[in-house]
Image (cartoon, rainbow, N blue to C red):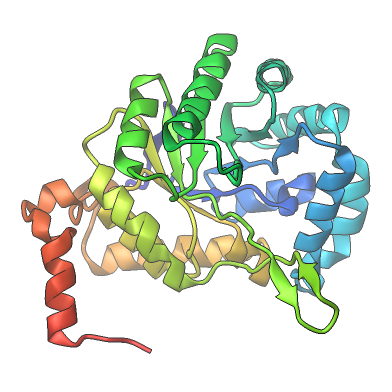
Length: 329
């Protein structure tokens, strides 16, 4: 069975990618992810902001892990945060495994994006994922200004490095498809759909903001599924599905929609890095049951273009659902 796929111009042995998480701060975990079937690993983001903020974010991730994940994260955090250690992590990871190691960069200034991108390339990263984590809470910013910010960041980084560059996007643009198309035309090698912004909650007892992390659930697959199915076959860049992957069923759905690769973090944090093998074995079993010999046979079969019935993804289908009374929950 041929599970190979291409992502960002890289040849991968299968479509399963371990997305950015503190699990990849540990070289032993990266090796195990490769052994369990991961075709590539995305390192956790390096942040331009104060390193203390990065440590706090990672500690919040640690708080939701199980006993298996917590056993090593404390020491990994202490040893691997900061630019110098991050670049060292890239070098050690590349030396430890044969699968591509993709760095993730979260900058704030044009200089920061460019400088860190160059250092990441020099350290040997196979590709770079731009984690443009930007909440436009400034009411004076227009939608076009927010979009221009993303285009400018991509253009600056692409000019600075030669390695493939993916953009991890949020779903909160007024026209997601048009934004992806503009980035595609600006040279993005791929897109990760979607970034999950972590909104605060309110503690009514203490009247403080609660900044905890909620891991994704399989119900969150629907929004990225919609947009991957809408974009598949219509852009040059690769499509990576992210959010909601809790079993091989979600992997299959994303592939049918047209994803080139499927990423997961929450499932690995919940169940440990060994769960990658569960996803891999489940994918293989499903393909065998369908008598599929190659991913090319199923990829994009349920995309908007392939179905030839645009109303399946558009407004008319929404109306039919409401009139048909098909409610869940």
